[in-house]
Each structure stands twice: as structure tokens, then as C-alpha cells.
Length: 482
Ligand code: HEM
Image 1 (tube, rainbow, N blue to C red):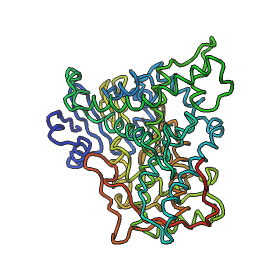
Image 2: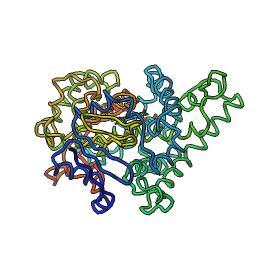
Image 3: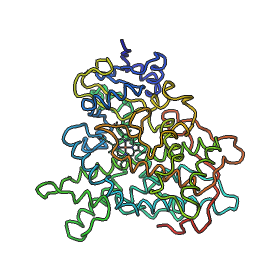
Image 4: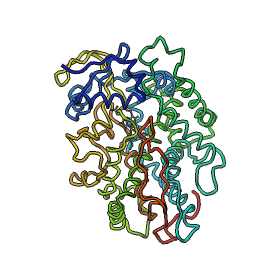
């Protein structure tokens, strides 16, 4: 018999809910547990064997999603992919992403734009630390959080800045506001809001989540909508003839009768969702990896040695180098394992009754694979809380995928991540360029980098500040903002 807990009051007494679920499972010494929240069976899983049963053997049954107040707001009523509940609309949007937006050929088409942003990343850091011969302490989070967002803004809208930006290559007010809004949305999309399990409470917005999500979406719309509207107009008036970025691609998609395949609302919602999928993991993995490696400098040395051997010191790391950097890839994988963005994978909901690993799972159950629980499972990982890239090395990974679900990166199956190649490139380019371009040290006066998490999330509690000094010939650093 497995534990079934009826628990909305318990959950409210023990915020944040994700920590409470992990604690209860640890106390009960179980890898699977069912929490009854309102009428929903929420099933948490910490074992790769059971996780594979769900996403391999029974994948078709668990390919729906949980609708929450926040997912329905950000996806304009579930028009998009990750928040698509399943069925025709989700299939259509997923197919578009796979074949038109994130395909290999599309990614090749947009390579110059990503390169420009990878160069701007290095230039922004160089501008900050090269003004003193000794180097300087800089805020790594600002640079690393904005790099994936800049890359997508460039690929989506052919622009880096919504406003004037910043002289030194950093974000302007508009970009700060844009990126911060996505992190607000990410915080609330699956936040165990009581009204998601007791729907009659929805209108009341007791925890204030609804207002915060609506405000964040408003901010993003303020930046995106004028660009989208103007671009549609340009195509209608024949002012544009060649597609130049992903927005053009989305506008030009046609159905079999030659009519636009996507409505304006679908375009807006899918663009917003693509930003949500891009801004978080690469930055979080790179910030944690560098923080951990600063506390174990032999790991920093190994990664830099690999970069010097594979890439050299006369040019900057390129995406084509990424598959040849097993140690740097292992560092990024280790950060995803030990420090995931969120406690749980995106929920998978069952479309019929089923038996999985001998447990009866009623239709409508919401399955949460534990990103923390799998990644730190002591039955799978030796000394699980130690950051140790070597544990991935023997497997010769050329990307961040983990299809055996020993930890969650892109998962697998019908709902698996469709942005794995882009996600790998953004993450490894970010971490790799930080390591190749600069010598990093713990700031003077500190023994170690503080590795504590925020109270209610798994993000690093404080932004990483570290001492950076350029380590390449000045001629290798990009000299002007692109
Ligand atoms: C290192 C970076 C990334 C990581 C670790 C990551 C991880 C994930 C995970 C865990 C899921 C949920 C899978 C599931 O439900 O089982 C997911 C879904 C998804 N990801 Fe990613 N992702 C990354 C980057 C990206 C990027 C850059 C994009 C696109 C720009 C993207 C697009 C998507 C989409 C569209 C889905 C939803 C698929 C569906 O529900 O059908 N991801 N990702």
C-alpha cells in the first residue's frame, strides 16, 4: 500500500509546498506518494525506474497537462505548447515548434544572431572587469540572466534592446523589466495555489498570485504587442518580402488552404511561452556551476584546460565546439542535476485510469517527477549533494539530455522538451565563455561562495558576485556592441 495523504490544510501550514512534499516522502522513506489536494491526486515520484514507467511505457496516457490559473493566463487559454492541455491545439503548436522554429536548419539560419549575443556577453563582462589591471568583482547573474533572453529577443524580433539599452552592453530598464516579468510568471505557474485545487476559490485570488501573474503578462505585452502588430502590418502592406527572424516565420506560416496558420493571439502567446522556456535553465545552471566550481578550484582548472586544448586562446568558443567539451558539458549537467530550476518537472496529467509500477493511478492524476528528488536520490547518486562533474564523464555526453531520467533535463516522450539543442547550446556557450574569457576567483575577504537557496525556491539566494580578470589577448575580445 502506498501513502495517500489528504492535505490542503497540511500544505498551507507547511509552505513552500514543494519542500513539504519532499520532506514527507523522506520521512515515509518512499519514492512515490499520492497527495490528495481537493479532488486531484497529485503523485510525486523520486525514482528513475518509476519515472521511466510513466514517461516511457505509459507515455501516451500521461501526455496531458494540469491547467492552473497562471498557466491559463500566460497561455491565453492554453493556446501554446508547454501549457497546451493536450489534443489538437497542443499537437499543432508542438509540430510548429519542432519543424519550423527549433529545427536544425532554422537554428543554423539564426546562428549569426546567437553569435552576436555570445560576443556581447563577453564584451559586457570585459567592459566591467578590464578597467583595473587587477580585474574586478562583478555580478555574474546580471550577465548570465540576460544572455539567453538577449539571444531569443534577437532571434525573435531582430533586436537586442526595446529601448536605448545600456552603453556598456548590459540590459537597459526595459530589458530588466522584461526578464523580471518572466521570472514572476515562472514562480507562479505551478505554485500549488489553493484555488488550482479548489476551483470555487478561483475568483477570490486569496494568495494574490493572479494579480501578480496578470501584471507580469501586461508588462511583456507592452513590449511584444507593438512589434508583433507592426510586423503583421508590414507583411500585409507588402513592405517586407523576406523573412528575417522567428516572428516573420510565425506570421508567414500557412495552412493547407493558404490562409495564416496562426491567429495573432496564438503568435503572441507562443512567443511569450518561448521566452519563459529560454530565460531560466541556462542562466540558473551556469550561475550554480560557476559558484560550485569557485569553491572547488581544481574543477575550474580542468574546465579551462579543456577549453584551451579544444578551442585555444586565439579565438572565442563557438557552438560547433560544444560537442567536443565533455568536461564543460559535465559541469552543466551536474548543475542541472544538483540545482534544478524547480523542484518538480512540469506536471503530466493522466487521460485514463492506469496501473503503473503496480500502483493504481486514477484518471486526472497529476504526476510530478521530482527534479530535486531524482537528481539527489542517494540510491542513484553517490554523495548526491556534492557537485562532482566527473560522475558524468565516463558516459561521453555531447549534450545535456538525460533520457534515462536519472535527473530531469529535457525528459523524454511526447511531452519531452523540444528545445534541447538550443538549450544545450545556450547553457554550454554561456558557461564556456565565462570560463574561457576570464579568470574567476572568490572575492577578497570571502572564504567561499555562499551556496544557499532562496527560502521559497531553488534559485541561489544571492546573485553570484565573483572576481573576474580577462585571460585572453585583448584583441580576442569583441570591441564594439553588435
Ligand atoms: C537547458 C535548457 C532547457 C531545459 C533544462 C529544459 C527542460 C524542459 C523540461 C524539463 C520540460 C518538460 C518536459 C516534460 O513535461 O516532461 C520542457 C518542455 C519544453 N521545453 Fe524545454 N528546456 C530547456 C530549454 C528550452 C528551450 C530553449 C526551448 C525553446 C525555446 C524549450 C522549449 C520547450 C517546450 C516547447 C516544452 C514543452 C513540450 C510539450 O509540452 O509538448 N526548452 N523543457
